[in-house]
Each structure stands twice: as C-alpha cells, then as structure tokens.
Length: 204
Image (cartoon, rainbow, N blue to C red; front, side, top):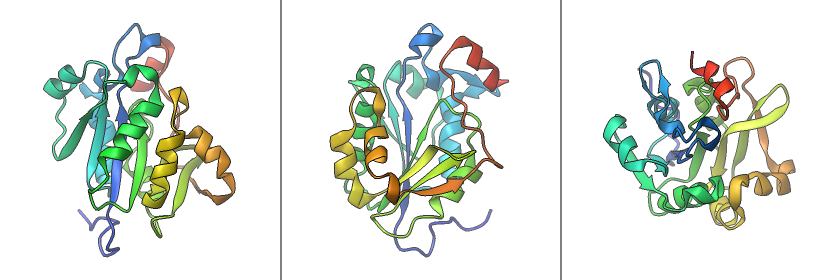
C-alpha cells in the first residue's frame, strides 16, 4: 500500500463519517446497519475514508448506536454518540466537528453513510485539494455538488453555527459557493443515496 495522501503535508486531514440516521423511510432500519456485501454499511463508508487517506477518523452514531458498536468492526475509529440525532444531520455534523477539536486535524473530509457508490478513490481525489486550513472543496457529479466535502479547520466554527435540522452544511455551502473547489468524481463514484426501500437496490 502506498503512502497516505496526507503524508508529508505536515497537517492531517481527518475523516468524518455521519452515520446516525434512523432510516425512518426504511421502516426504522438504521442506515449504518444495512447489509452491504455481508457487513454493516458503516464499515464500507469508514473504510472509504481510511483508504482514501484520512486520519484521524471520527464516526458519528445515533440510531441504535449500541448495536452499531457491537456489530460493526471499525478499527482505529473514534466513535461519537449523538443523542440529538433525531433532530437531523445538522446535529451530527456539529457533534463530529466539535469532536475533532484538539485532534490536530487541519481539515476534515465529511462523508455520509448512505452512499455506497462513493469509495476511497473519490475521497482521495477530494482530499488532494487540501491546501490550507481555509480550504473548501467538494466532489461533483455531472456538474452537481455532492459528497464528500472537505472543510478546512478555519471554517469549522461557522459550519457548526449554521448546521441545523436536516440541512447539514447546505446553508454554509450555498453562502460560500464561489469559494468551493469542485472536484469532478463522475468517473469514479456514484452519489446515489439510500432513503427509501426502492433505494436498497444500491446495495446489490
């Protein structure tokens, strides 16, 4: 295995996986525990961040957090429990970024657990756009912004302050549209997410 993309930069880029969703439209099946190739989906998403070069790696849990901890093999991950997960993705983003304070990370690549078509190649491509603690980059697919998203640490306080409900960082990204470096990942990843029972085909 080759060197991590962060080696030699003098500033680690953390991976932040948001995996707290309860799968309300999936009949209450927590997304982190959906079966993907015989293992919980959260393992695939965490591995994508790790193999893409992110370290440290923090995973935000919510729905059925104790079961996720028991069933999923997440070596080297810092597991963060978000008791407010039902309020929406914004609370998980806040909890995750706050947990990275003091970690030494100068940026974080944020990924979502319910996008099985996004792997290490897309993570590495976005991570490669890290230049400074004010960096802001996002994967794009056919010209549309998506995940993963890289936030330099200087941006975390404002992202935390603006992350509410199910919007996550959307408000912040909209307000800073002109500052985002878009990284085309259409050739190596798919941004489709799992929200409804029909979407479970993505796990096939």
